[in-house]
Image (cartoon, rainbow, N blue to C red; front, side):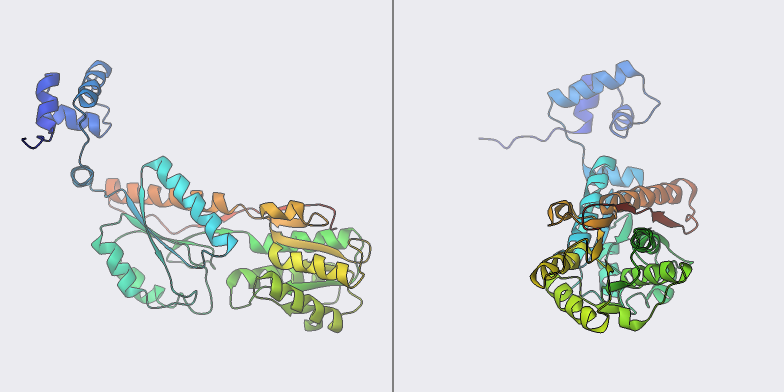
Length: 342
């Protein structure tokens, strides 16, 4: 038995009665081919079961059609939802993904990681790991030497990089303003870990809303969790001891808010009569909490999709015009969803 001979671009060209260059133009979706010729070539490709080499295509287009994606904490809802958006938009635009998950959120040993992506000839990198503590210190030293675009998701604005982020501050401010508008006079806050940039932004939104309303703000009105329901419970009970007059609470995420609802039931506090509760994230399950949770919805799927679209646009500019696009700070609006918990 002889080995099956692989069909080549020359076989397609010969059978279609065109040049190899014309077949290449059809493969690369060039416009300088008539519809009749394009249809004939594609039919021949199907008939011969010819599949173009991805490597050859990347060489001819100066693109690998690969993105590097750096993430962390995929066990958490937020990072996994963002990755879902990245994946779906990359698929739509014809890009593959090389994924690396950091061992820890505050990892700064990124040089080997960046070199690995460069060795695999990715067209660009999406840094989807959250900003925590000083895990962005390497930017000023390493970014100038990178010759591929790098886009960051969810971090503070910096003048040398493009960032796509949820508007955490405005969402938190809207949540607190809602509690004020329904007549709550003593509004506490359960924050996420304050080494996270998002947690600091949400706390700042709570503080700003209270101050603008002429209401008191003090550290006695705030406790910290670590995003988990278990931490939310202990933070809530601690906050009640420090701030027993509390009649409204803005919680840094929906998972911690879930334990606030449960613990309130256990200690005999009626929600929303005795205590109004607002979360943040808008996870799908929050609609089915008891009572259904008022929350600030952040569209993390859209966050990932916008990041991919923006990076793809920057790559096209780099290839076609040999320039890097000026850094942007793109903010995805959040939305207050009012339910029975407030």
